[in-house]
Amino acid sequence: MLGNNLPSARDVIALYRSHNIKRMRIYDPNQAALNALRGSGIELLMGVPNSDLESLSTNPSNANSWVQRNVRNYWPDVKFRYIAVGNEVSPNSGLAKHVLPAMRNVYNALVAAGLQNQIKVSTAVDTTLIGTSYPPSKGAFRDDYRWFLDPIIWFLNDARAPLLANIYPYFSYAGNPGSISLPYALFQAPGPVVWDSGRGYQNLFDAMFDALVAALSRAWGSNLEVVVSETGWPSAGGVATTIDNAATYNDFLTRHIKKGSPMRPNKEIETYIFAMFDENNKEPALEKHWGLFYPNRPSSIRSISEEREAGMWRLKMALRSII
Image (cartoon, rainbow, N blue to C red; front, side, top):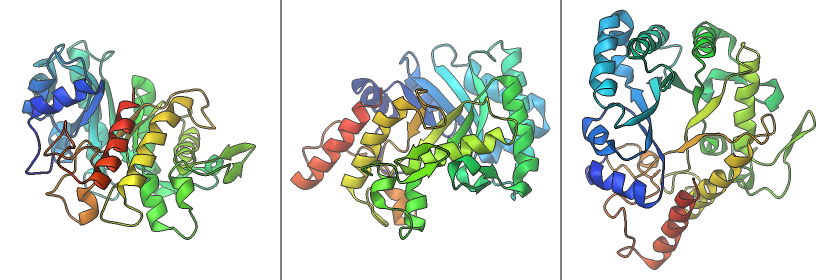
């Protein structure tokens, strides 16, 4: 939502419905978005902003008020699926100690509302928490982060909620293009690139996902579901950032996740693509260009050049294949 040329919330919902997109992630309880979602049938992953963590963790009544204001006031007209309490909070930050208490207080507020079985409470992590990721079967969290992660994993086990994980093959590739091939990152490798314990890895997404699965198994989380709460590929502003590459990644991703991963075969991976629109208020330039749609013409591509139009059409086809 960090743009000054974005369509209205109601137009966004209309765009989702026109493409039969059935799930959405928003990063805070934006009231316009929540009102537009009423009656849409779209399932929602809604975030608790990091700036709210301390308040919700230190006072249960604040969590009760937050749930009343942002969830109960809209339920069941809005189909909440997950509440992500914090996004990519670093264990080294002062906010880290507030994540689990805030999760507990939000969960308890949902229990009081009788919604704990309908709406799951989790937090969204990134892959920097993994210390060992290669080969995937050796995946392990950093030892100095276990104090933060282990209690969260125990909570999720008890609450029967998934871990939310932001997984970006793009950044792994862009940070090490000499060792990681572009076809491997874009689901285009002709055969397995990595063999690990009899499992063949033909794309980087699977390798990163399974490294997380292995890390969870070493931290009493072998039975946890993993929801990929962000992934995507930018179309400009950095290394290997073209519309064609972005279209290729998103298109093949949406087909591939239905098959699961080598460690969890035939088990579809619930995945959210970042992002719906380019965001022109972000910096640096790379952060502006993750959108599947141009924000100023969300339902039409007639005004752009033929070459760019062809690329965006591929992006739109990728979007249609999500369901």
